[in-house]
Structures are given as C-alpha cells and as structure tokens.
Image (cartoon, rainbow, N blue to C red; front, top):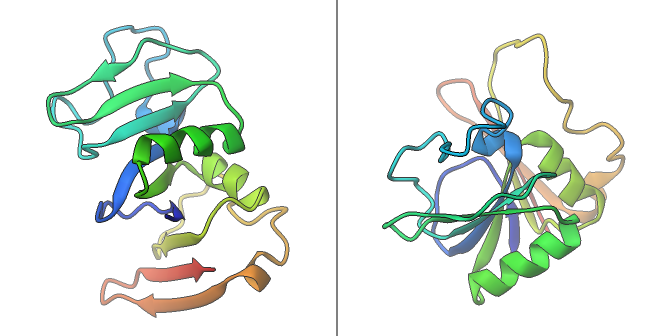
Length: 156
C-alpha cells in the first residue's frame, strides 16, 4: 500500500482519495449546502474521498461508489483514516498544492507525480518552498510529452 500524491486521474489500485476543500470547490461555494462538487452526479473517483476542511459537513454519497466525507484532521490522521477506507489499496492525495505540501512536509508520500505545463499563470502556490532536499529521499525521473508538459516522478 502506497501514499500517492498526484493530479493524474488514473485510479488503478487506489482505494481512497484525500483532497483539499478547494479541489472539492468549497472555496467557491462555502455556504451552499447543495454543492456536490465540480463533477456533477458522476464523480470520477468511485472510492471514498476525504475532503480536508475546517468546516465539517454531512457526507455526500453517489451511486457509483464515490462518497465524500468532510473532515478536519492532520495529514497523519487523514491518512490513517484513508488507509482504513482503502482496505489495503493505495491512498491518493489528490491536491491541491497546499494539501500535497502538508503531506510531503511530514514524509507521508511514497510517490509523487508533478506535471509542469509550459505556461505562466502569474499566481498560485509554490509547491517546493520549505521542502528543501526533498529529492534525497526519492528516486526522481522525468519525461517530456509531445505537448511540452514535463512529468516528474518522485518515488521512494
């Protein structure tokens, strides 16, 4: 069983997901109780999803097996719960950047996939700040796609 931080939407071997409130969309709809995420009635996860938030909400369940649970927890507690829900399968840390940074900072990520697109957004969170020497605990590989996107993988 691994802890994987990635934005790639492959789900092979993933039994649970952890994401931040922003990735779920709570930053855009914080007080709307009917908000069910960006994905409509068919979220792509098909596994339990723990949404890290400071404001707990009732769970949301979908027919395809996706169940969003809203929790206020440390990365360690969230991962322990995610592993329990995953039942021996991998737990994916879906993002955003602050969630990935929090799990990386305490050493809870076994594999990290980062896709770097050749555009300048002008704002956003810097993923690597204060994560000095992160690469010493990982084997780092990269490949460039025809689109110009650079895929970097950090693996223990």
